[in-house]
Image (cartoon, rainbow, N blue to C red; front, side, top):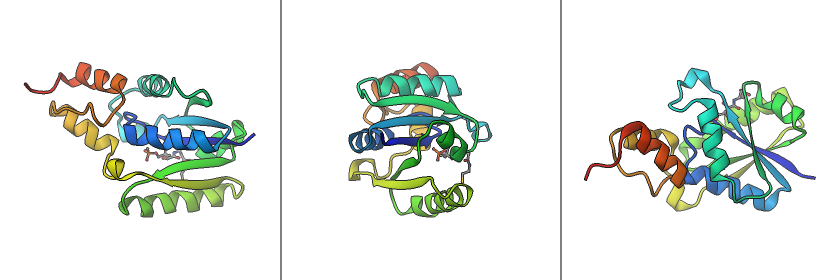
Length: 162
Ligand code: PNS
């Protein structure tokens, strides 16, 4: 049984995240989307709200489940018996940060393997922070996020300007 984690803050989950989770679910037996509490990031949505939005967004994927965590990723991986981390890589700007995290996770647990999936061009420059900014200025983000997330953002900030 190949069980993998797809970790992140998911504030909120975007179609880019969903693309990586879907691709991971096609090559792994089971995928656990690990929603980090990340209190230092001052997230827009609470961890419970983020988790619930991820659950709704992945409901159609039978081998995907969702967990929240406020521990080291390596500890969650051991706890869930999930020795593989799958992450998405977008533009070249992601490399430095992802290489740092992968290198440190190897130091913390050499048995935790990290693999990367390239984002397709349409998601190359998509991020949760850009989505939050557009939505907070009442722009239309419906093409960037699952419909449940669009509804949550409209409820939070109001809908796009007519
Ligand atoms: O979506 P994000 O915010 O880029 O995800 C970052 C995340 C949550 C994957 C990363 O911060 C993480 O793994 N946090 C858990 C704490 C931890 O293990 N930190 C050390 C990583 S080297």
